[in-house]
Image 1 (cartoon, rainbow, N blue to C red):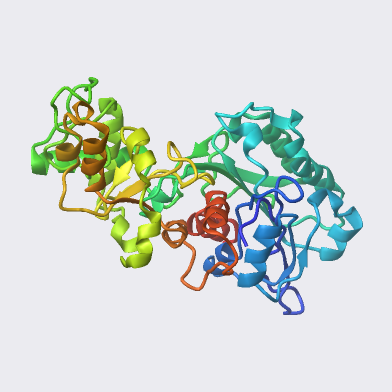
Image 2 (cartoon, rainbow, N blue to C red; image 1 turned 90 degrees about the vertical axis):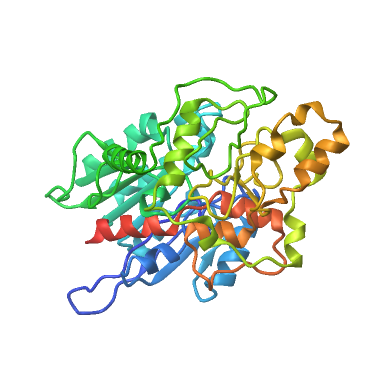
Length: 424
């Protein structure tokens, strides 16, 4: 369902008027690895192009179960990409490739092994196969983490595309550019087999917005300037505030006119959050949340996590217009894996955190518990990723497995718009 790399031959009308098929592959990092990849069929559906999936490929058993649950009629190949021969690729005769190579060789916190990392083998195999296909696909879309754009793998991709006659454009995009309150910055490349450039193509540049949108910097400036004029608020000069200094603060609280710096944040970090929460073009989180019920108690942060990570949490409320990137470790690890939701909206974070370090452990826990902090549910993360209501998991897929699959996913709306640009 959520795939690491895919090829897709998008629907088109051929000379005889018959609709062509689509090929989609899904690949984990290694056989049996608990990892999904990124793409699904929803992106193709939302892009309003017709398509017939003729093959989906994945070695990840969990991802395959979810894929079959959502797309039961699609042929599913339980094999590696390297296990697909040139002859098999030729028989599939696809029109589009959607690929999302494993990101670990390019992440900032990883070893950055690039093409020397064995996990790039599937990607390099595709680059080797591409020029030798009997019929080149018309379209290619690639996704990876920020950092891929400076890699040798990217250079090899561009070299292969040029050799095969593709025109391409690169992007660095986050769902926030489409009004979705979730930061998930990713590198994208779209390529088309044609002699003419894209109408919006900027050779040598990486676009940070869609062609029909204003440049990111000008949008931010316009929004901030407008709000400053209305409220009279000007972000303070940069400084650090100690959590026990007595200053009121709340890193995750939606910033109002009386802005503050909380915990160990710099003003630069605070200003970024202020800009996000003040951007009226972005929806509020409450539009993506499930209704509260007794079952939500299972998502409350445990006491140990509250005491150990309180000052590191990115805390948001339903009225906020932002959330940080959800990773595959969400709920299993606390720090840096995604925002948590404050469900006691009537409380101000600064009233809870003020001088909290001076309290006993029991008193700290009592105060922190009043915020009713919980993790976003898998369904809510899926909502932020743009998955439709009909998307679901088989009952046997655990909550931890759901978070891992979603943490490796992409935003459906972003990819769908890229596909529309590519095929339009």
